[in-house]
Amino acid sequence: MGFIEKQRELPVNGGYDVVVIGGGTAGAFAAIAAATEGSRVILVEQFGKLGGTATVGLVCPIMHAHIEGNPTCSYIGKIVTERLRALGACAENGTPNPTAFDPLILSIVLEQLAVEKGVKILYHTYFCDTVTENGKVTGIIVENKSGRSVISGKVYIDCTGDGDVCVRAGADYVRGNPETGYNQPVSLRYIVAGVDFEKYGAFMRRVCEETKLGGCSPDIHYAAVTSNGKWAFTHIFDKAIENGDLVPDDKVYWQSFTVPGRLGAIAFNNPEFFDLKDATDAEGLSSIQVQGKTAILRQMAFYKKYFEGFETAYLAEISGMVGIRESRNIVADYVLSGEEMLAKAKFEDAVCISNYPVDIHGKTLQFGNKIQAVDDGRPYYEIPYRTTLVKGFENLMVAGRCIGADFLAESSLRVMHSVRALGEAAGIGAAFAVNEGVTPRDIDGARVRNHMLQLGADFGKDYR
Image (cartoon, rainbow, N blue to C red; front, top):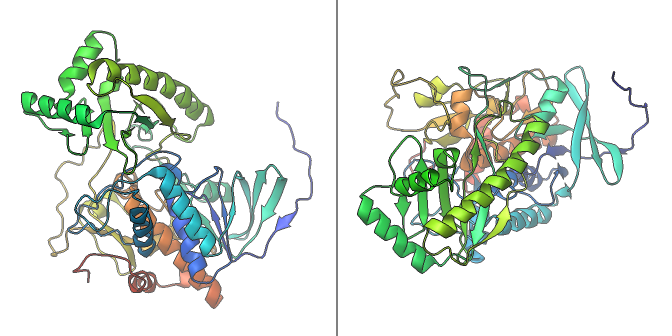
């Protein structure tokens, strides 16, 4: 038996040009970009900091674009890097676009940038529903400690990562591995501090030399182990599993990175969980939080017993959110396919380029070598602006990993440099539309890209 909620009149918080829902990587960049163009922007965020997966989720490295020079296609990204560098919170790893960063400092930098540009940030606020009429969003319903209310604006950008706003509005979407129906596996990341880097580095060098295997870099204290290969640390995991100190799932995917600016700190990209079919299921996500902490304590005991340098190490932080690689992808005016991604397709309205590979955890799709990349001298694929325009809606956009893309394409574009650029492009497109009294669909994506370039976005030295 269900219950009918009592009808009530809700107060309206209006007067905004652009409403951004979700203050993760894409959302923060969208809000900053739109405000930079003069729009009145409100950013709705469920946590108390910006950055989402990168900060609350502790996904500390920005994966390399796999293009010479590592272009990130974002002018805001360059500003963020400059500020992180000034604070000693990013690694210099031989590229103008460092990949490792301190997640706490990043959250502060994003917040400061947003405030400086005039973005109104509404923290600890949950999106509940949309108010729509004839293919147009007229408001979103939110709830926080002040109660339930409606926020209204001219253009709405869904940066929730899961396409929550679009789904509540009635947009179509796809989800899951087409072979299994499962979303990609999820993780719960954590940071360990108090590691004796000198001792741990010497231990790693000895293991690497003895095994003659890869998967570890003593100079930056990076290491990895997976179940589908032989790595320098594999035998240590095997011994721990045999002794009952680990379980087999602990070995399926394990990865560690140092955290710039934090002496003796290492971030772990695990434990990973494979049985959650729906990455938007509330009970399932809650269960992962519980299971994850148990697994983290088990892994922490393993480090202290088997890794030299962890004798005085301690748990410093556990992610406040489950790390989701893929959930829903919204049907947009253009849906990027995996075949196009693998073939290095190009688009006139491109707003991001990437050569990041297929990155499907768990069972891999059997696409093999059936698709050959076009040899046009530009070894990357492009993501068109049209993937941010929600099909059937005149003022609703989507940015981040949940743009218009199929499962295979999403497995590549879901990484941070891509979603930064997509958020930036959506914010600019929304602001242009508001300034000119048109819809985001009326804005030429090539114009958005050119504006990004004019503001300093790096698309590579030989782009077009």
